[in-house]
Image (cartoon, rainbow, N blue to C red; front, side, top):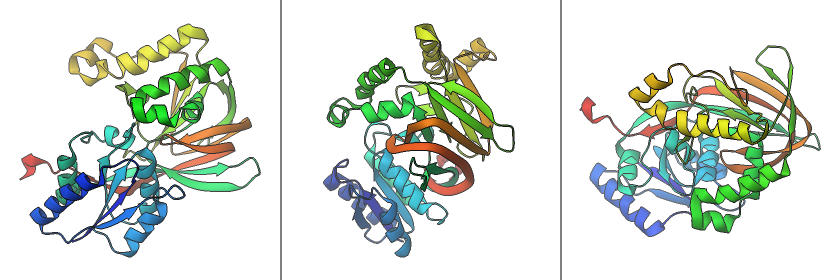
Length: 322
C-alpha cells in the first residue's frame, strides 16, 4: 500500500507533515509515500493525474480549499479516495464533513486507516465573455455576485495574517459597490425564471466558517444541487440574513433544544432556496464567479450538474464498529 501526498508548499509545514506520515506508514505497514508539490500554474489537477498513473491507494491533500478542489477535480471518477489534511483559512470541505481541523496526527491517522465515503461532485460549465466554455468541478459551492466579489477583493497578505476575518473588509467593500445581478435561470426541465439578486450560490453542501450555515438542508451525498439567492432590501434585509445563517442555522439548529425552539422556520424574503439536479443560468452582463473559495474569472452563463457519489473521501473509522 502506498499513499501519494499532494501538498501546497506555501500552506503546509512540510517537515512536520513528513514526520507524521512516516509514523503512520510504519504503524500500518505502508510503503513510503510519494510526495508531489502543487504549483502556482496548477494547484492539483495534474498532480492528481500523476497519482492515478502511479496507482496510489489514497491521495492525501495537504493545502487550502483551492488545493482540495483541484485534487478532487483530478480524482473525480477514479475510485481513488481523497484524504484531507486541512490547511489554510476556510477548510470548507473538511468543515462540512465534520473532520478534524487542528489535529495533524489524527488527520494523518485517518488517511492511512480510515474508511471511504462517496460524496457528490458539482460539475460546472463556465461560459466566458468571449464564448469559450471551461468545464470545472467543485466540492462545496460556486458563487456569483457579492460572494465572488468578496473573494476577489480580499487582500492575500491580510488573509494570511488574519484568516477568515480578512473577508470582513472585502465584504464591506463589495456591499459598498451595490451591484445587482440580473439572472435568468432554469431548474431541471422547468420553466425559465428571472430574478434580480445580490448573490447567487449553487451548493453541494452548506456550512461556512465562523459557524455559519448558508444552506441548512444541503447534503453532500443526496445527488442534488442546493441553490440560494440573496436579495436583501436595505440594511434590515442583511440583518435578517445574518440572523438566519449565523444564529438560527449556525447555532440553534445544532442542538435538539434549539431545533425545538425554532420549530419549522418560515421563509424570509431576502433568502430564496431551491433544489435541483441540473441548473442553467445566464446573466445580464459578465459576472465574477468563485469555486470553493477561489476566483475563477468572469462568466456570462453557467450550466451545473451533480455527479452523485463521484468522489471517495477518506473518513475516520467508527471506533464502535471494532
